Image (cartoon, rainbow, N blue to C red; front, side):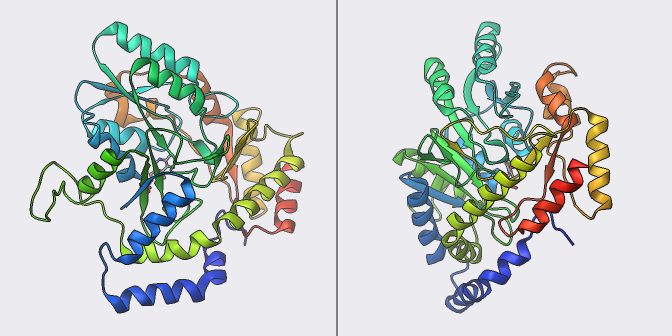
Length: 372
Ligand SMILES: *Cc1c(COP(=O)(O)O)cnc(C)c1O
């Protein structure tokens, strides 16, 4: 059977070390914020090239916490794309702020920076909302265009939070994802490029003051002492066992990234004449959370997926409905046609099996089925 993501194979390869790391936690008994958590945070910060990594309970909390630290709330506008996982926009609404959607670039599927600036200007002119922050998403593992994004952000005095939930390990002009904005959020959900065996996440930043606030928010807004509460926070800690597992996986992570890139290259060589394969701008390296391709038209997509399914090859659609058309965001007042690129892509895109343990003959088989 061909798996969309094969986590069991990775466990088979790392079993001895993972089992012994879990055992060590069970033995020392520091299940919450144990030594493995600090160790992981140091290694994550070093890997990413930032001063501070603050581990947390999941990628959604990793997005939520910096917005809380910046005081994002009612009356604030936060700009992001509608072509992402719901969590990106959900955290904005959760704080009472307003998500302002901006369409994506048709080549990278990441936020279109020209449209971003137009949108910021429009919000300023309307005088209803206070433009506060931007959450670019590094979709499918490919970093957004941060040089251009940071320029717009500085011009209008906006904070930038990188949604690196899918892009841990990816590179933008020699810098790692997680280091590309004022703060970044990643996820260790099992299916992400670096995944644990439950929920997990981390926030990255170079700013000392922000890091201090994030450590406090992570534990109910605590002050110097556990029972001194200085701000509203959450229960957002990463379990020690998950940190112990991630420490093992981090050691082989670069090797896995190389494998993912080789697999993506093979897919692209085999498919670029049949379908629209991913385009990776110069100087960028994707972490290939997903390998996503575009069919010429929606009917063609269903036909290819059906053929693949019959051959025992699973596919997935990220994302079938852009967020501005989801019921939950109905009250924002968007309608069909507002973000034509996101809408068009959502009707034609689909993803192929992608994990570092995918075998050559499986890749060839998948390519052959699609070529027919
Ligand atoms: C997975 C994901 C999240 C949320 O991460 P969780 O760990 O599942 O909370 C946020 N944004 C994007 C783009 C994601 O893919």
